[in-house]
Image (tube, rainbow, N blue to C red; front, top):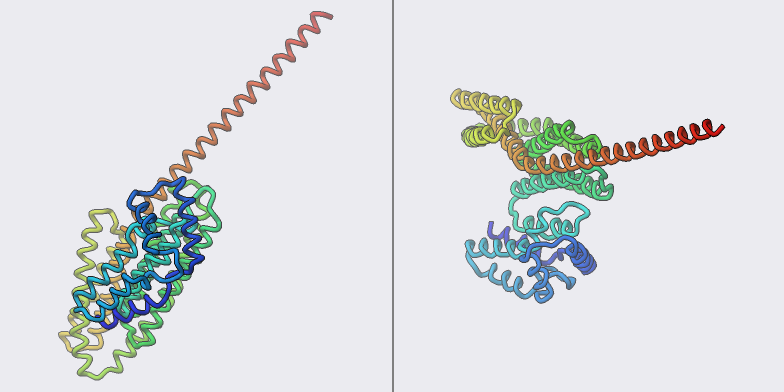
Amino acid sequence: MAKDLEKKLKQFRNKPLHSKEWSDSLERKIILYTKDNPIPDSVTKELKSSRQRQRVTDGSSFLEQPTFRGMFYQLRLSSLGMKMTLALGLILALVGGVGAAAEAAVPSEPLYSWKVNVNERARSAITVGAQNQAEYEVKLMQKRLGELAKVSVQAEVDAQAQTEATVRFGAQQDKVQARIESLENESNTRVALEINSRAAATLEANAELLSGLRLRIPPVANRGLETAIDSIVSARDRIEARASGLEARFRSEVQARGEAMLVVEARERVQAGESRVNMATRIADEAATQNALTIEIRGQLRDAQNALIRAQEALERENHFQAITEAQVAVEAALEIESKIKARLQAADQVKDLLRIGDQLDIEAEGETEAELDLDLEIDSEVESEIENELNLGNQLFIGS
């Protein structure tokens, strides 16, 4: 693992995070943005000190600076513990200050470029192992989902921001698919199947939450929301379409193994199933206290528990193939439960924000309606006055005649 980490960090050092044009453009945007949107003192200090450290404004990578070259020298000489400590220090250096402020940014905002080109690439650089990398891509997909929802629920949707959010979400979903394909090509079908389940559950949970917003926000904000939901549902369908092929390949690979390997794997998979189902049960119990446990998730939990029982019984009968396949069903169901609950909890604050936006749009719409009514009353008053004047004039003419 230490060698893998060192290799990844070296690759990261030799690959610039950005061009000079990108950094100059970002600096100009930040300066303009902060004139009207003050940011915390800690971030301001980070921006001021960046010139002294040549952190961004030259064309080289962060990791080409003398400080980081020294860190890599230490990485070659130090123990595993020190390597991990230095790696953590690297991440803290890259995502502190401006990086922390950038985490809330969405497409079209100045710090968004920092978020995706620096923060996320820095974290990706020290994510070691095919499974961990795939799981990280799923986490990034959840981020892209949140951004897409946020820019879509507006009275006047910023077309450019929504287009960028949609494109980035699609690109991230492609990265998840690529990770799954890579795992499958490396004959790591079981892990590919589990990552596929995580991704599908994440997309499903977000689609459900956003669909539930339809009736809770004003119609004026629904147009962008519908576009976002369509993108998510399409992505979910693509992910789910892979599941049957992966399951068939997994079963085929298990059947091709010798009896001795089946015995060992059956025990391991049943133990993994027990661990995952217990974890999912604990998460579900906690979710129940936060109103994040749906009837569907309860049903999936029962399915996972029943699949685990079947796996345990098959293992006792020494039907190792059935034990492995049933245990895998339990693991996948448990992973889906975990992913759905986590996605629902992560999206809870986001949904509250969207509802606040919706409430504000309602208030603005009511304000416009009241203004229109006031204008109508003024017009009616003017018309009545004109009619009264005409009648008075008519009376005067009649009397005069």
